[in-house]
Image 1 (cartoon, rainbow, N blue to C red):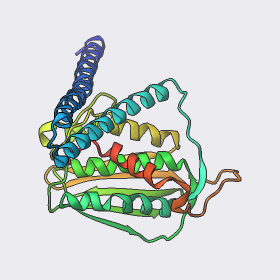
Image 2 (image 1 turned 180 degrees about the vertical axis):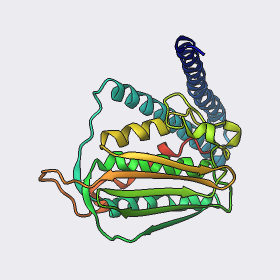
Image 3 (image 1 turned 45 degrees about the vertical axis):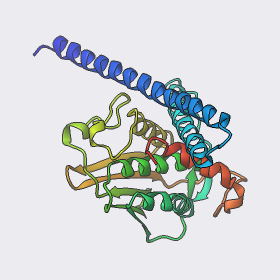
Length: 278
């Protein structure tokens, strides 16, 4: 096969992925909007009823809220990827205790994950590791990977989170006992327009841009992410954050929970997990 033909086939394949991606994005935008509209109509009817059923009203408002979060998540991801592509997206590095931060993130989603009948285990040989990280982006990375693990892990399965280090990096691994990813998909899992087969997910949806965003956020940290996976056995994503310290007056050995609003944190979690049906 000539180089020209190979290039043409590659371009055609990429264009097909782009077309499928935008079709999926359109579907992802349309679906929650339709659900929100329908729930609003039903709620309006309920409110006109003198014998208002509060349980039904609450169900409709929760439905509106979750699908609003789905829209926020999708739009945030698209905007951030656009900024990254335009080199206008910045990370704000601070010297933080990454062990404390990750443990805090994991603790915040334990109840939700257990409600899906999935076990979650956090393990670390270190109690403290100060390194330069954008803590907001770290939270987004971890929540994205945990959300992904929940989608592809059946009830009774387990998600493992581990923190270790080598000479150059702080290493965070998130491993699940889910369905795994086949070799053909592994090679392009972090590409912009690639999506894992929806039929494989556990009662959830997605656009396929989450892992691309995670990869981009790791690159902005001068770090890396790798994937090990075997169909039927599960997947393991490993994050490599370079060990470095920045000159800053805002270093945090361990940020107390009060520094970041509890309600805002709950909302951020709900947004990142919004494409997993309650």
